[in-house]
Image 1 (spheres, rainbow, N blue to C red):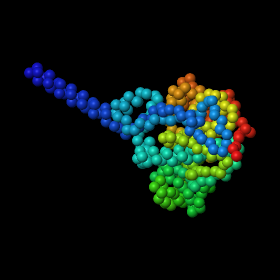
Image 2 (cartoon, rainbow, N blue to C red):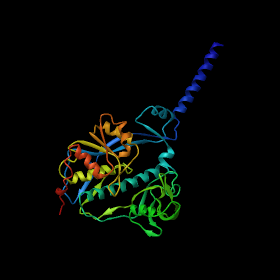
Image 3 (cartoon, helix red, strand yellow):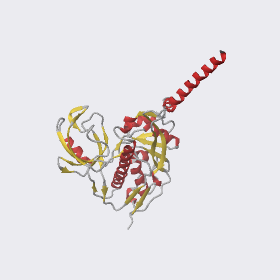
Image 4 (tube, one colour):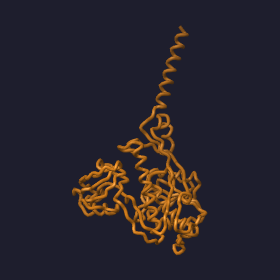
Length: 347
């Protein structure tokens, strides 16, 4: 009798253990954002047609590591880790697959490098007439007029039947209209199919009299005829958040002196054609990555400064919303400035 009781208890325990193991390894619909690494832009920027100055300091771009569909056990363990953020799959991918998201991020990285190059060379005083082939959608706000109509990687190349080159032209067209007006857009999708859509504009939440489409855009295939060619090898890193770092990196290698005073600097933030710096995701994780890399200063968009400070430890953190502000931050740290008059072009 006792033997059978022992056997029964053993079987029950085995079933419970098996159930726990099966639950623990079951994947969830959550993604984990973990601290990534810092990559020095000097190592990935090449210039042709100008003298290159090898800086002693470093300007690096920060990355995050994205772990897809974590298991129940991992999710439980990550919940108590302040350096890891858990996000539902729909927040990461929306209506896209993992492959479609990666493809969209790759497109955003390529555009980011184009914009960074133009902004840096214009900052250095070089003449170059930029051209583009439309407005690339790099974000769609939930619940906005564009939600469900436009998706990331769409390229808007006509507004009301008129071709546009730059993202600013789309912004201007929206600003000329009122909430409730219709706006006809001709769009090229990621699969190269073309569609004309009519969108009823919404309103800016804080100002109901101002029209809003609800997208974040950048100029598609931005190029300019400069006397300098810049090549940036971003490797397998995707997304737009290295824009500020690339811009500062190009400026640094094209001008003598030490823009960073020989120190190690990391940044995150998108770069726009007007030189403004935009917010990005995963700032807390990027702050940890910068801190782990031992950088002296981490530059972030002003709207994300408080979040970066929660994970900065003893690392110095500063805010910059434009390329001018970012350079000023470096000068205040002891950097030599850009020395624009010493830019040396080749023959």
